[in-house]
Image (cartoon, rainbow, N blue to C red):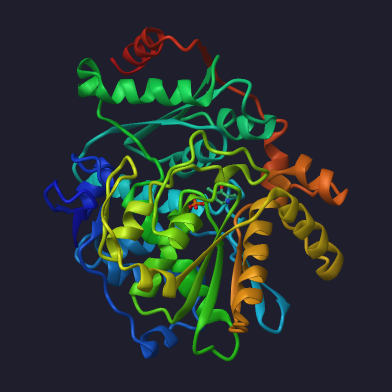
Length: 447
Ligand SMILES: *Cc1c(COP(=O)(O)O)cnc(C)c1O
């Protein structure tokens, strides 16, 4: 597999290089030059297999030549040791729950594969890596859990002391081993700035610092698999399928675009966003403008005013967008709109959907999943398309107990692993926002 940068100024690299470096030297995002095309027969031959087996067989083709079969099998079975339920809502609608991983968020699908693939290459070359990651809550816990207990990789996660919930903090501070949590007296942006400065600091070059953020291609590719999985598990294999995806940085949606590129018969991708509506506006008007600062909405993991994965979407449709959001050449807008329907959902509608869904179907959903459901409803209203649809629930309602309680009046029951951490001992170090203090800490710790 060769990968090019969306900014088109960097050289093509191998999968391993793209995975370990994350961002291309020209600040673009890596994209595979070619992907396999799966025939319907090939896909159908997998319909009775489990999630990890389907992931192993499809990823085996996608990453052919990049990793040996036995290692890939072990990695996939280790990463995907949890359920992927498909809940029937009505004759034409299913919910796919991507919230059964160790941090109860769909981010586990991507982070766990990326971590294990990184470990595979590092071990082979006897190299070590330190991952620095700044988080406003969810990404940090998914990354920390994904790397927990792996060899050759240490993780240092910086979080704003007063901006994460107790439950989010405990998911990062109760792990220990190769995971270090740093509580910063500041905001998320301060954490982010310290991490960026460390990456740019020549005196720290010898430490092999790396990031594990959402732009890594090693996270994107595994996110194409659950779209295939849901298609294979539906009864009466539909000719076509619609997916509704609650979107923020558009990584999840890009997974679906990749699946479609690889032969999944997708009728339409509904990219539902909250009040950060820069993408639906772009599709409507052909003009792109970031939203700065991003708007604070109930579905807070989707408060993104400029989704970095947009550059990837645009490159697939023949255009070019740089990391700042400038469009250098337009994509094929007709084709883009034919494949993707994007719609903003207000907080009011999000809450109303959570309530209605519980009353009508007795199914508890959280704000992100509700955006996806409402997006599908609006799409159907606008187009009269009644194709079988799968809408994604991206987090366990118990991750948002206050929000769910305020809207529906019920406190969602936390899953076992979230309950267990309540009583575990927390370990963390405290930092102010001064970079020198952070650097001193890194030097003491890593030499
Ligand atoms: C990150 C996240 C999203 C948005 O996913 P993107 O890939 O950034 O579009 C949606 N829901 C939840 C719960 C998330 O954590």
